[in-house]
Length: 440
Image (cartoon, rainbow, N blue to C red):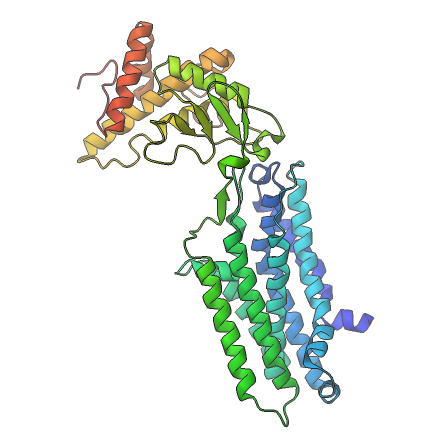
């Protein structure tokens, strides 16, 4: 048994696991998986680029050793699936160990959170690894070991790497790494993408299991019907998987549906996901901020939350789309609330000239800066004095924005509210608002 472990390539689990650890530590930011175990697990889809070539190489190595020994004659008397499983499981286990290492390291970055991991994630990961291991096994039965191992690694890596970049996008879901983009604080894995990978992997595994015995038992067997069945299975898996992924873009996630949000009875009502309220509950604070923004002249909001405010008449219904991170500070929450108002403004505008585009941009910037500064002054006074760049605590305002802000501060409260309402009306119509202190 120890010889089998060594010769199957299972020893590569150690460097593969180290590579997975280094990748997660280097590229996975804590805020991207904060309080979100499913986001941590989804990082393993990208680590398939490490695990699957390892499984494929181990499969090719085992097949080569079987061909070089008397194992082919022994295998002729045994079911092909049994021989394949016996030879491949150590390499598959090694690849899964590398994936598990990455998942564990990423999970440590979450700081805990509600258990929301879809069972489709481990199912898709295991089946994906098995598919690549079987692919390497078949190559090893067809070619010399050195050539088979090299081809197994190149084909496995190329499929995972390039399927992510080609069109149509559905092909990327058959390979799997694109599923890493599924999750954030307001989104989770779209099951259609995971089912696409699962269906393709199951059909691919079935096709290779049908075809591999033809290579193990080369005498006295008709190859026509099994070959047709293998091709049909692979084609059905590709077509079915692409059908399931139809309509999915480059983002493999889906916004948590409104009925699953956790709403707090307040005016306005703020609804957040379990992930967003796990570390701290900003709902009362955000409700207060929206109330302040309304007094400043911003449109009235009746309900705010992720996934809301997306329809054309959402603003008329008082809906606002809200982006909240679990560890968001109060000043950041104020900016998020303001962006839920100002973000959609002029988003679809097509100015006729560069000058019109500049005035539209400056109007938007002054309005956003004024709302942030004024709201912070009301709810977090120690952080007022904006605008400043995101992430900077006390960055100075740019001159182009600060001058209009001074003019606004010199106005009466009624004049300030009037200008804000006028600015919203103008920007909604793709018309630059009058900038205080400047002549048109």
